[in-house]
Length: 255
Length: 255
Image (cartoon, rainbow over all chains, first blue to last red; front, side, top):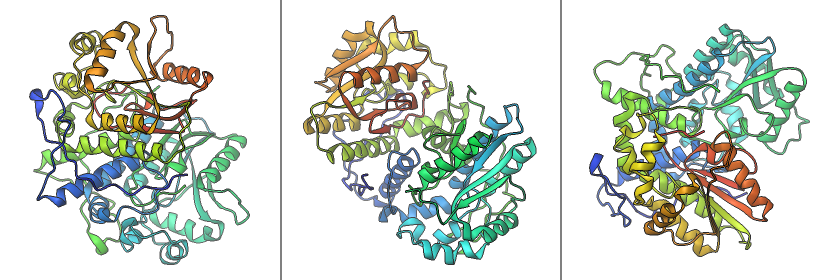
């Protein structure tokens, strides 16, 4: 599989057109000088959009030039607004249905129900290559991850509507106690199942692991109404939920 | 299928945190007063991101409050940069492969290779409900749609690499002459096939129509290396290309 190819830094910026005067695009785009910051910001916004729509995949780190743009996005209001919008869509979808007792909604954990921004803010917002030992030591084992507030709000709505909640995470089984305690401390008080990765699990990647776990749930008689995750590997592959919701996460990519 | 649910206008804006001081999200988000424009811009950016990542689907028009934000986006530099990034990714993917003589790359037409911004700029950038008669009369039949420059550049790269190009469009067969002339005038001089919709075609929607046409291509012995389109209905369903690329289009949604 092709890994992320570094964003080519050729400077090609469109000349701006407005309203009804717009008729055609200039084919030769002018080079803009003297405003490198806004140019970098624009390109990093394009990179982020392309990653969210899964046009860029398999990337190991964010582009170095995008650390500041990523920090500004994640620590600012836009990330919260984006997270809210996706959670709202999931809520609108879920509440419009007649709920059956076997209906479940799946959530991923890290980056979906619990925020790992406290970790990533100390590690360049994704510019450092992921180190699972360090992540576990500095973040998972502490058990003090805050809730993503918009996801917590949605979770509460869904529980009140009568949906069963299943957390499906790539965290290892050995992290069960700390994960349960963290979920509760963050406000997630009830769930049908908390699925963690067994040491014997030999799935080649997260996508296959999560697909297989969803297949087991379907075999057990659950109907997966929605899957909510911040990674495409949470959402792709069969069986799917009736609908999938991709929360924003421009900091890392998990296969 | 659930159609687009109107964006709820509850004002909940996150208080901003910065850098290493960030530790947890405020659960009760403060309401911001006095800066309605930037608030609308933020929410419309969230709406656009959610639409691009297919978290919002089946929408018939853009939110009324987002006309200005959509116009600014489409007529400005960000759209061009976003379009360039996606085309670049497609190009990087295509050039890293050994090309077989049956390898094809599929492009949609409207909003992908030809820009219909000249039409939408006269019709509220997607806030008006789509009228196919008017679209044909005022836009398709004129045959003067400009190329999306970033797609044209990518097309040229791909042709030079040796890929066969197939255009697969929902335009009707009766528009063949004007479509061919428009493609050529816009700079698309060569193609393997131009697939338009036959009057007898009874596909229930664009997604099924395009799936069926891709299946025919596979039966004919082509290998679909990539599908490049501005609509999710260009990309979803089997058979797929080896990879799919979703160009930005926040103005309309086609099933």
